[in-house]
Image (spheres, rainbow, N blue to C red):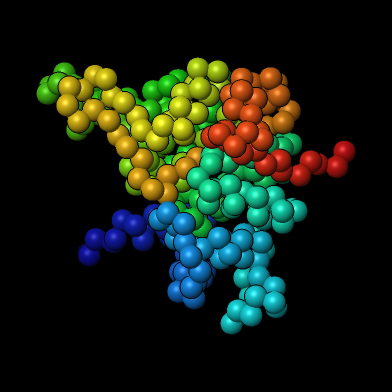
Length: 247
Ligand SMILES: Nc1ncnc2c1ncn2[C@@H]1O[C@H](COP(=O)(O)OP(=O)(O)OP(=O)(O)O)[C@@H](O)[C@H]1O
Ligand SMILES: [Mg+2]
């Protein structure tokens, strides 16, 4: 019996598909009719990203309707897109279950065609998890080299010029938050263990969408977002608040 294509098999059997797979056909159609300017290596122009997330209106004069995927104030989505297009990191803050992660996924799918470079932040998240770690067996066998290095999802997104996602940023220690801010502003990661070729530079298109739960203690007291400053023009983060739940 012929062997099935692994990618097709994954798509058919996956319990939950990432947005770029679930909406692959719609994204490809939007790309085909998109004549707007695209920042960096974006797949869609900012206008088409907005239509993908918020749905189309008759005023858009499209041949087919695009369904609304994220519900909330359109200005939140617009500010998020402008932030990413102007090469600043995006921090989505809001109450639990208001769609922060969902919006981050939709934006990454529309902009990079890949929403799976995700690091889940916890109190135990280490710098290795946002930078790189080592395949110990390969290091013992052949020493430390780029081949024996395991890039984190953030490093992979840098190498590919795509959006990385960092969930629950404010649950992490300030060291980890600072390391992430450093990557966002410097746009490279040093690998001091290697002798030559020991820097990984980010390709154009790399950026990070982080989320933070406003009920987490860290989201108001964390040194990362507050020291970065939400209004400073030199800040690597631009904060966008997701809607609050009505209580
Ligand atoms: N504003 C919204 N528009 C569309 N769907 C939403 C919205 N808010 C929540 N949902 C739905 O609820 C699910 C859970 O939302 P999501 O995980 O994005 O919330 P969150 O803000 O990241 O919560 P948490 O702070 O707990 O991480 C989403 O996958 C989505 O299906
Ligand atoms: Mg979330």
